[in-house]
Length: 500
Ligand SMILES: [Zn+2]
Image (cartoon, rainbow, N blue to C red; front, side, top):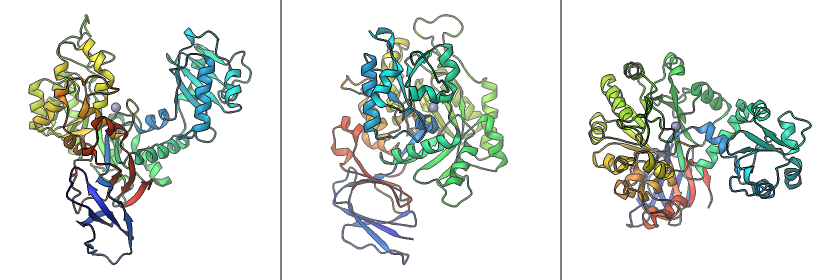
């Protein structure tokens, strides 16, 4: 095994000189002043890499992803800005010729979001053929009720003669399964590619809440050879039996290999809906809503949640309970208390003050997605006008001592922890006024909530999971955190991304 000596590194937020960091056997084994040769316990060869004053931070984690969905969606081209068929075709051509995320062999380029109702001319297959030739292209309309395909795209859908290339309503519904579902080989290839892209942003690990048989899917990926990203594979109730039967508890490697990168994650349960669909379960009715669902919808009966969590807890699994409305959060906390379970509440978007304190008392992690606050601030003002002061209450959680974990909920937001950190710190995007800035996090807290609760000071003995960034996050304008330049990433001491 080769040890790696990272020379001339700086530590984030510390301006006390350069250090050398020795990585051996997948761990950080020494942090010493630059030039003071650290002693290595093993007699391995040593590879030195000069970081030239770049900043080393613990590798980043995304605590909430749907990785396969993200892997699919990130290849889709956004054509929602197109104002004509020619404009959309030009966007397609630019993507085909300048792709940073090439479409896998044999797969169509899928775009989404075009709105042709306002266009002067109708979309045609010929317009796309003219732009990209024999490349299969399929664009989904903004309302998903129609699709527009190139001739090769039509062929991919099994349609050999079509008068226009614009498939509407039933015609599209009949053809769409070919696009909406992909087989395992394709999904796995896309997931590998998504993991590579995550590494380019300094990511070393994710929690995967894909709504799927994750044990089977990840064992298959491990068997094919998986590297580059740690994964905690969540389990849904319908697949819990298999996980229990396999005797897997928290953080057990799914392939049984010591130091395995893919480990057992928590039981995931959805307890309510979402803000945008007025289904997050709240104590107070949504503004303007009447009728029996005016408070939102609970997805699991209160007398079923705690027993389900007990079952997982007794088997050594954490629980990750989706709860967005304040009432759903209160009930989820009740269930944590009743089951004696450990774990997290996912989202925690609206909380009563008493329940913030209960998070802390029960040691339940608030697994939050700060960028959702930026996406949903306007709808929150519309639907929760009387309560946005306690919506996405990151600072309240922090002050109460609640463990925080930041995530993206990709594909809802981009799988990029720097985006989550920036949103948490600035409560702002695109130059808008900060939204409830009193609920923002300080940068140190936001970073620590994005590195699996490791120390920013690079503790000796910890895993050699690291990101190399070109500038100190504490020295940049907070808006600039979104585009933090990442020069390198290591998982267990192995480079998963290196751009210097
Ligand atoms: Zn999710």
